[in-house]
Structures are given as C-alpha cells and as structure tokens.
Amino acid sequence: MLKKQVILAFLFVVAGVSAGHAQSCEGNFKVTGVPLITAMTYKTSYDFPKVKADQVLKALAQAVAAEGFLGIQVNKSLGAIDAYQETTGSGREQTLRIVARKKGTGTRVDAMFNIQQGQVTSEKVVRKGLCDIVMSATD
Image (cartoon, rainbow, N blue to C red; front, side, top):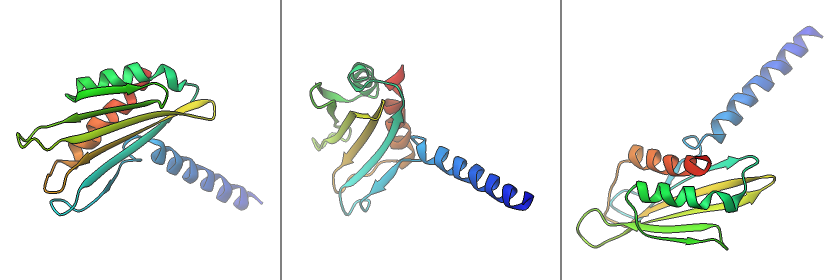
C-alpha cells in the first residue's frame, strides 16, 4: 500500500513539474519555418488567472512600443494589437500580433512574430522579446 502511495505521489510531482514548465512563456515558445528558405513564425502564450482581457491591452501595447515596434494598432473589440518593425533597411517588415482573450476566469495572451522569407533573427532574442511583452500584461 505504501509503495502505491509513493508511486502516486511521484507521478503527481512529475505532472506538476511538467505542467509548470509547459505554462511558462519560454516553455510555450515555438518556431515554425525554415531559416532563409521560408517565412518564419515565432509564437508563445501565457495564461493569467483572474486577469481580465480588456484590462491588459494598454500594458501590452506599451510593452510593444518599448520593444521598438511601429504602427501599433490596438483593436479593443478583438483584444488584439498589431505592429511592425523594419530593421534591415530593405523595407521588408516583420509583423507582430498580440491577442488577449478570455479563458475561464482569466486571460490568455498569445503573441506571434513573423519574419519574411530570406530574413533571419536570433531565436533567443525573439523569445525574450515576446515573453517580455506577454509578461507585461500584469505590470
């Protein structure tokens, strides 16, 4: 009986660690595309319990501006922020979309950054930038 309890306790601890890791902004970060060959999409998300979606848009928009994005447009009815940056001098924009939506009693914030075919960037820099923006929702 004790052995069964120890195994169950271990499984709950492992499940808790896995769930905690999957819930982090960095843990939710994903990249799709082939560098230089196709467009690249960088995505992440985070769930904020007990935070209302309509209350986080201003903080998210300010964080987008702090990261150097231009053309920031906030659509309150969609809970979305769109912005762009052009860093190469080529006139080819990289786009950003942040969405804050109700999830249960809280808010899920999704962030997606796109770069065009032929462009490259550091995955580490994008992950940090996106997570800085997403986590600003409660600032």
